[in-house]
Image (cartoon, rainbow, N blue to C red; front, side):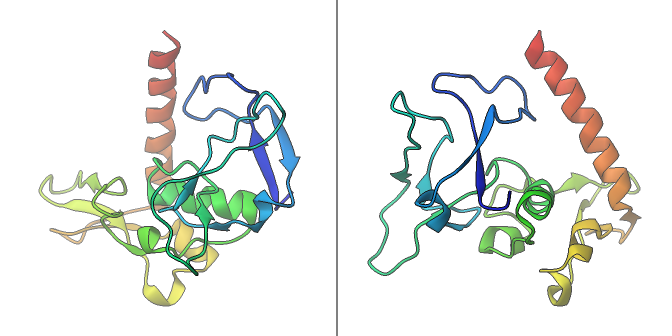
Length: 171
């Protein structure tokens, strides 16, 4: 469901990195929020004791400015957020954070180049294809040596890292 929201029960902890929601809900009010990875409104997508979603301004919102929430986990790197939005909401995000190679100074979308060990690899997304599905599977290119790594190899590494982190969190 494109305009649905994954929810957790009130007080239910997020137990792993890739935790799935307890349920899906459709909210005509919440569906009015636009998406931005640098949202000015936030929610924890947990139901209150009254069964409501609660939203709060994350910063001052100027008159006439759109109120936006992040439809994904904002702490995830760009390549994960963009893929999740494509998979669940059927669009490729082109917000300012996703188009910024440094992700607004978070640099979560960079990996040390294994070929030269000097530069950093990031997903090579041409501005002309930034909003297409093809941009989600683009190669990663090193800033120092120009070496390329296939997106599938990056996702395999990411998946293995998530499995190790989940095992650590689960004790």
